[in-house]
Image 1 (spheres, rainbow, N blue to C red):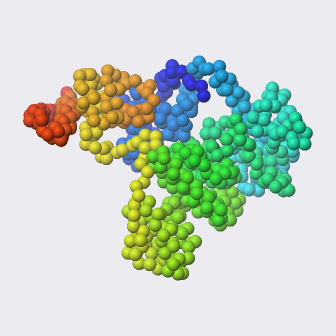
Image 2: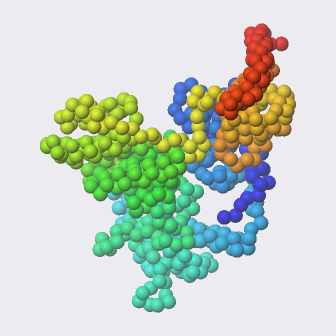
Image 3: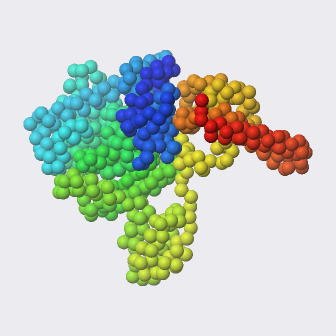
Length: 598
């Protein structure tokens, strides 16, 4: 994949209006010369705790610790990778991106990929026109209307119809300059077994659902037959250069922004189920593409939102698919070290969102998908409903099945409530249930994209290091001097704050923002937004400097004691001197902050 030049990225960064970009997601109000606040777009809150610093184009939430720059903001809200964020922002602010000079073979591969995507997009547009304009598609239009699906939404999803003729796409594509090899590579045609050397349209007399990547590029099609005698009700594009079965989810391009905004993504099975959900206002819904959920798709799901709602069919196979899908999502999230919440929307037996839409209307679909329960509750209910509760042996088997479920559940109100329900349904004492189901495993740590730890959870030393850097930014003249003078390697014990200090050295007033480390971007954003909310005096900065020195000495004293005590007396003398210096700076800071400022 071709890379964009560094100059292009910087021109995009310079063109971004941070207040306009963030203001499209949440209302901001001025809280200082270079500080704006509003309600966080990443979590629900009543009191604004989300800060934006326009000059350096960074943000930080004091509530959920979301932090980053403009590119991070677009990645989080739009569900894009860095390249997609760059292209999104370039288009928004009218910046032309330039490609790095490519290897000739790489350039040829990119040109071929662009042609194949163009061919697929043209074919999708053709199928759309056939559905809405051709008499042959009347039955397809009636079928879709009979399922309760609105034309406006079907057009948004680019649903179409492949006519019954065997060569419409073949001939039209040839007229537009596309080769037979390109048609075969996209899976739009297939070779004939009866007439060697000839090819014909793969999709015929079928409703077509375009399968897109998260940026809306058509990669292939899922197609439903309108021929009742056709043994293949659904047919997908074959594996090829562009479409790879099991890598993508249906409607990610339409759902990703809504999933990012709500913090929740809903996963359904069929194409019409997803469209029905969107029609009901559940715009954060995606679908499986006719396969069991794969690891790659699970990674896509967990990248869309931290809360995943599974809304698969309620029949036996659907319930089994639900359990398997949940296991895949949990496994992938654990590998990525992401903290996710799994929930289940219980569908009516023998029904799916599209059936509910047709029978009861959009409001019923929204209510159904909104009535999700934690996955652990679903597992408990499934075990209780499916197990043999009438015999002691059956009850023991249910408890054995539930033991690993409760092992993953931390102590709390949810666990206690489920233990009471198990005891009640099985006719066993709560004490016995609690003993049999005892056990706990740690939940995955949230660290997939950027680890976020509230300040209160940080070690005391790291809190001091961050506080010092905040004050250096808030008081850049003296802060810049200290960053140049101090031995940062010795003073900073935390690797991430040490890296941040090194980054700020020599540029504390205008930090270089062209960095690729997401954790460093997030920390610098947090420091800058926190600093913008401060009105400190110089004595506070000096006090934090002394605190850093004391922390360094504490580490040295601990090391000296472990090595037999050599040099311990001198270190303790240094500590006593620093304590006296600290008292002086704290007294001055208290005096100056208590007095009216000039």
